[in-house]
Image 1 (tube, rainbow, N blue to C red):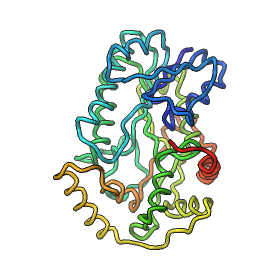
Image 2 (tube, rainbow, N blue to C red):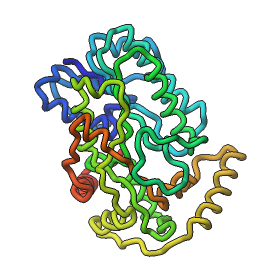
Image 3 (tube, one colour):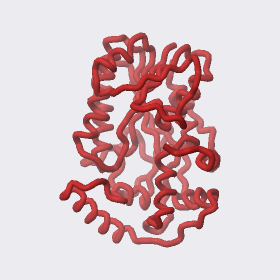
Length: 328
């Protein structure tokens, strides 16, 4: 079985390549990315790295030849950015992949979407895949991921869609490093009362779920939430990370209303004057202060998904890696 993983030099993509490389059922892994990162690279006869741009249909057509399964992890993932940027990175690429997969007779297309499509700055716990979506998406990233999902649903390709929440663990160069960076710049404060419950999901568990969907006919044409199924107090876990790194815990608080008002003005200024992304966005303020968790009953029932790694184990794994690896 030949597998193509796009976004293979990113966090999830890298961990997928790593796991598939150890599985004898997968004869060759084509790992596609924009650049090769030494911290997210595996040297193996089974793995072939190919760099290129998924917005190029000719490149994509060559990439998908003789491929059985495509796992699309590639994305522009940011709370800030123009519609055109996200259209190019998350929608045009999806269109190219779908068209080429149909032409090259790819058997299954697995798409990594995002639960950001549910988020609307309100407390939401135990969200089901079938729950109504907000009338307006929180940002252009969320909008683009939903549109990419719809493109896949309207195609003739057998597909599986995953919406994994807040990935953590070894290789994370986004979530925890951003928190640490904000702390080191003295810009990290508890937003609200600090009691908000959220999902943090070990990346190893997401990898397991994706592999469980392969060769599972009941998974086809389905959309799955993914998390550990046990929401945790966000700020307690942030402080746990800081303690593990021998840093002081966060105690200072700022009210949600004040934080929102300040960031709202910063976003307006950035948009009017075409400035770079503000230090903090409205989306970030919401994520740091609101309770937000997913229901994973569907993945448990259909995929027999059982989260193996705990949140604390994934944090410990990250801290060890972070202390000893250069972050790109």
